Structure formats: structure tokens, C-alpha cells
Length: 146
Length: 307
Image (cartoon, rainbow over all chains, first blue to last red; front, side, top):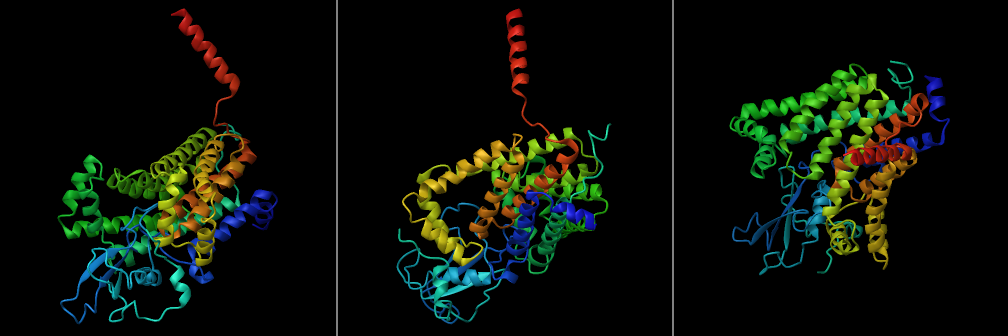
């Protein structure tokens, strides 16, 4: 076994393979342990981390006549690769970019956002638009002016 | 068969490590389906997926009838989900333990083929993604008794997928700088990279006037590298190919997710086997020699003249 490992590093390509192994572990297998973004990259399905948000002009939980619409992340525009997957943090931050903007249907302004992920509105009863978030989060997903 | 033509064992630590990663990938895939997608959380139940696939006309003709029958009964859908989960778990565990590799390959082949038949018309992205898992299954079926001929065919097969995914990307307008604006916009608005800092760097670089040309140029670079995989420089080309795949995954993380990772794992398996096989076989030729082509042309001319 020792001989096999010694043999593993006797050629330059071995250092590339070592880099691949480190990259796989740190950025694909357990990226969260290294402070990196973690989605479904390690064996997840293409569909089990879709992020959906409910947008409204006021609290839809208490105001029954609130204007409400739903938006699924990535489905708004053409996707370059697959429709983007999310985790709970990115779903909330992605939804926040709608705050204070006109609704896609027009006619009202988005004042309330409820992120929906893995079959639950996981931030209820909080409003993503008013919940405190570090200022740096605003750079995660920016709204590009059309 | 002489030892130089075939091998029962390729002693490479890297080949074993790539197998270890593939095994963990399939184990996690089944774990996700059990606890997250199909059963416990049910965030993406199989019935919903099957109905989506049928509704979009994705299954092969025979498979469509089977799926239409299955979705009528919840217990049959549950059995199908359990079948997928148990097959992926069994294959992954056996590969992890490095025992019964052939059996593991057959188990994975059966389940991944059934997935392929279910999403057959789902587009080139799906076909290559599922195709890679089938390639891996066949690799582990053959790996214990790999010959130069089989390895040549396996290499053709994987490089074919390399071109197929480029064709898929061609349809997404990747080769043209004109696609830059909408792709860059989508990247800024919806996509996350492996770290926010990397995303910021890409956004800044994207503001350079030449950015659309470099952006589109990556497709042409990948095309060149994929061609080079056919030559005797394929180890160097393989390294470049894998670096492109890794950067794609890092940059387009939540858009590529496990599809991008499977490309990297398959590339790792292929490259580590190619490297290990060099000691026994040398360079396995994938393209015909010039003199073979010349001889073929000459004999074809003779045949035509005789006619």
C-alpha cells in the first residue's frame, strides 16, 4: 500500500489528480465545511431544490385581499444551463431582489416576499423584505436593468 | 489473450480514488431521493416527475405506456422509487467497498437505463447527463477485463458525449459573442458561483470590452480540446478538458449542480484509467494513421477504377 502511494506521486500528472481530489472534496462534496456555496451538486436531483417565492403588495397571511403572485427562480428568463437550484439562504436572498419593485404583472409594488423551498414557506411569518440581512447579500443576485 | 493486450488489474491509487468518489456520488444520490425527493420530505416526488416527463413527451414509446400505467397507482410509484433508490445505493456501496464491481455495474446500468428511457426526449443535456452514468456503469462492468479494443470503444463513447454536450451548448448560442448579453444577465440575476467572491470577479471581468469574445471563446477552446482527446496528446488534453469542466462547475454552480459534477467524476475515471493503462498498453490509438488513410484511399481508387 505504501509502495502504491509512493508510486502515485512519481509523475507530474499525479499532482493534477491530487488537485482534482481536493477540488472534488472541498467544492463539490462538502463545500459548506469550507465556507463555500452548497446546493445539490453532490448527487442531488435537478428538481429537488427549486426555489419559488410568493410576492404580495402586503402581508398575504393576514390580509385576505392582498395582491399575490408566484415566481419560480430561473423560470423568469431563459436558463443558460439548467434552471438554477437553491438552498434556503440563496432562495431568500434571491427573492429579496423583488422587494420594492413593480410586480411582473404590473399594477402594484412588491412589499412582501415569502420564499418557498422543499414544500414549505420556511420563513413565515417573517417578510424577506424587512428581515435584517448583511449588506453584502445584496450583491448575490442583482437586478440588471433591462 | 496475451498480458500486453488485456489486463485484469490496473494498479492506480487515482483510479481507486475516482471509484471512491463515484461510489459516494451514487450513495448520496439515493440518500437524497430517499430523504429529500421521493419519500420523507417529498420535495420532488417521483409521481410528479413522471407526470411531467409524460406530459412533455419525454419517454420512449414503450416506456411511456409503462409509466402511464405506473402513475395510476401510488403503490407502484412507491415501488419504482424504492427500486431506483435501492439500485443506486447497492451500486454505490459495492463500488465503495470495492467488491462485486461487475455486479455493481449491472445494477447501476439497469436503473440508469430505465431513467434514460424515461427522459429520452428530454434534450441533449439530459441524454448526456444520464449517458455519463451509463458510461460509468459499463466501465465498472468491463474494468476487470478491459482490453485495448474495449477501452478504445469506451473512449470513443465518452468523447462522443463530449461533442454531444458541445452541440447542446451550440444550440444555446455559446459559440457566438452575441449570446453574451443574455447569458451574462442571467448569470448576474439568477446564478451563484462556488463563492460570492468568484461571482463578483466574473461580473467585473464581464464588463471588459473583450469579455464577449473570451466568453464565446471558451466554447471553441472546449471544441479544440475535445478534438485533441482523440490524439496521442489526450492526457494533456484530458487535463485541459477537466479544468474547463471544473471551472464551469465553479462558475455556474447552481445551474449545473450534479450534472457538472458527474462530468468531472467521469472525466476523472476516464483520465485515471487512461493514465494507468499507459504502463501496460502505451498509447491506444483512436485515430487512423495517415498511411492507413492513404492506403484506404488508394484501394478505394483501385476499386472505383475497376468498376
